[in-house]
Image 1 (cartoon, rainbow, N blue to C red):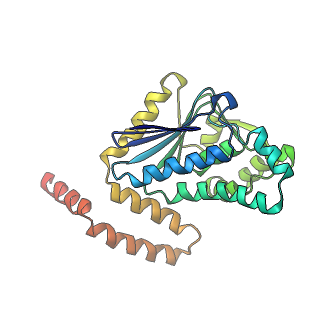
Image 2: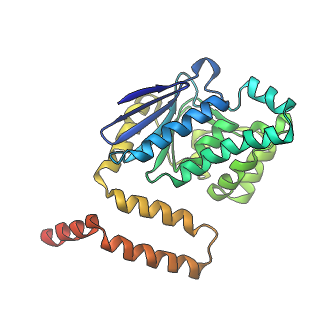
Image 3: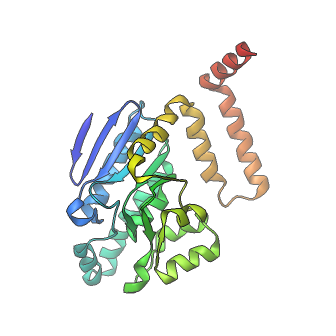
Length: 256
């Protein structure tokens, strides 16, 4: 199934939902229409029980260059109420990614800057082309990567997060991997195949176990050690009761 939710292309096949930012002429810059279309695509994936993983990528040379000029002009002239509503849409996107039942992968090629880097950071997993670049240059125009900071702070050390958001410099894919911002870096010539192979691997795993694992991992964030153990106990029991777990144990015992 392929659907053109301009400015996003959504397709679903063999358990993989592919969400493509489709504004290549604008380097896939974010605006209200694009963020709304992303939300629509993610909701479609979440409703489809056959989907095992979502891959977000960008058409053209870049993943996403951040907010476009019209969006910046709107920010500069908007009232407090209008800015709150505009920012709330991005908050909704970040929460949607976090609450989606399946893993969400950012497949980053070219540049992921400002809101584009924020979008990648908000995903559960980040796969980068070796030539990809990441950065949060908002400080250069007097802006702050405010909401994504809540996610960035959980991905990298406090000092690296501080450096990224206050200096506004770009870093390479390899450096992003070294500091924990990127999971895997793949060669440019095999990037699409490597991303596909990575995504396909989720088809062989238990959907319920992955969903429970994702929910528990993020639920534990901010909990005390004891609270985390108790939350883990609850999910441990739930996982034992699923049909997938029962069948998986039976298969393992038969092999033994």
